[in-house]
Amino acid sequence: MSSWLKPTSRPAGPNRRWLILGIVAIAQLMVVLDATIVNIALPHAQRALHISETNRQWVVTAYALAFGGLLLLGGRIADYGGRRRAFLIGLIGFAGASALGAGAVSGDMLFAARALQGAFGALLAPAALSVLTTTFEHGADRAKAFAVYGSISAGGAAVGLLLGGILTQYLSWRWTLLVNAPIAIAAIFAAARFVPESRAEGTTRYDVPGAASVTAGLVAIVYGFTRASTDGWGSSTTLGLLAAGVVLLAAFVAIELRSTHPLLPMRIPLDRNRGGSYLAAIAVGGAMLGTFVFLSYYLQLVKHYSPVKTGLAVVPISGIIIVAAVVATKLLPRLGPRLVMSAGGVIGAGGMLLLAQTTVSSSYVAHILPAELVLGFGMGLVFIPLQNTATHGVDPNDAGAASALTNASQQIGGALGTALFNTFYTVAVASYLAANGHGASTLPHALVHGYDRAFSLAAAAILLAAIVAFSLIRGQRRERQRSDGRVALGTTPATDSV
Image 1 (cartoon, rainbow, N blue to C red):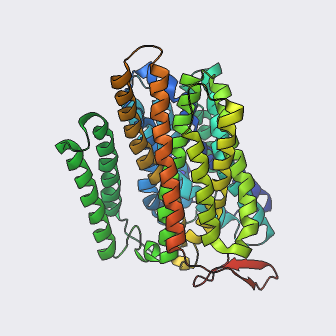
Image 2: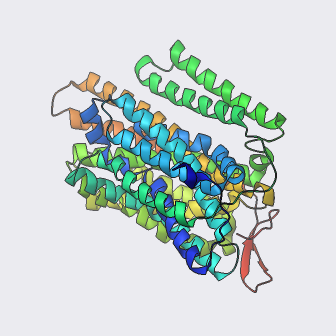
Image 3: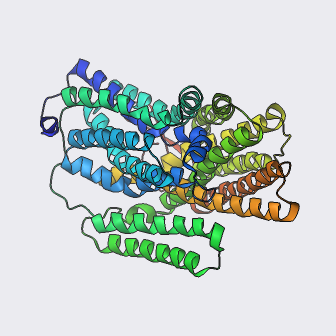
């Protein structure tokens, strides 16, 4: 195995490049779908491992926190330590963590495995993108390769929901994790044989203090949200954890401002347009990941859908996002990112508010599906201009960090949002049961009351994203002709092509 990690410099020939694309595509799909594949399985894993209502969100947030908090560090390690080496280590670690989670005998063991998955995913994802970037450096083949990569990134959530339902229903919830192992092993053998080594020129020091402080700060805040559901928002434990999280995040900013090799150069998020995009990404990331979790619980526990039926019932959100993304691409030249993002946020918040009116007897066709379509369409209008604006006008040396920060913002938002929504959910359910009794007929109504409270909070998060976009993003629509004859969209003052 160690010989596989030794640097090689074999060039990728015309035929080998497409094989490398296939290897990268497999790795990217595995990372993307793992953010949603456990959502459908979560009720089954919770029962099997006796995970409490308060702690169940750690199955989701442990992965998202580790992935989002370590993504920037993973990108630097891949670039300077060797992209092939990082890719292989990421695959091996991801497979091992997946197998560990599949064999979990307690909630804590599952949480730890998910965190390990996120950590190795934070190394694997940027390594995969770097391998693709260096394999396809220019021309029409590069456009085709990135079209494949983008399609997988966009459709991975839907694949995760469907696959999670199928594996849970016909095999076991454990297979939503174990399925990664054989896929990763096949990719490991292929990558070891066909992916050449490459690395960025020069030397760098890794900003471990920055990575440690931001990850610890986020964990403290999430744990503070979790304890609030049992101890209350005013308890010393809750306030202490939240205060520690804020202090650690402030320390992260101070470290980055003083570091000669910062994990995150502050010039990237301090740009008004990019900063607005990152804040919006945190808000919508929290809203969407939390929604997938609670909608899955509603359909399975209240409507008694099977895992497969639940996956099919939720996947229209991902489908309509892809459709709306095409619409957003056509609207951007005419309206600019500010108006498209703001309008999408308002539409998405409206769809989420429809979900917040759900009752025990709500019809899927008459109520849930229309809400999903409105929500998904709004989010599709948000995601395309958000991703474009987040990397607009950035210095070429900061391009990788800016792209990684977009993904990290969504993952971090997902972790924070899921933890916060779960706290509001558990408090709402407890309050409803205290006021109406604990009878069997009361429980479904109490659960729906909690889900509606979470959906309402998610709607507020999406609306906040719309307000942030409208207030901070100042790009103006314009078009310019590129040297290759194609029209590129730009914003002012940022002038790079979208």
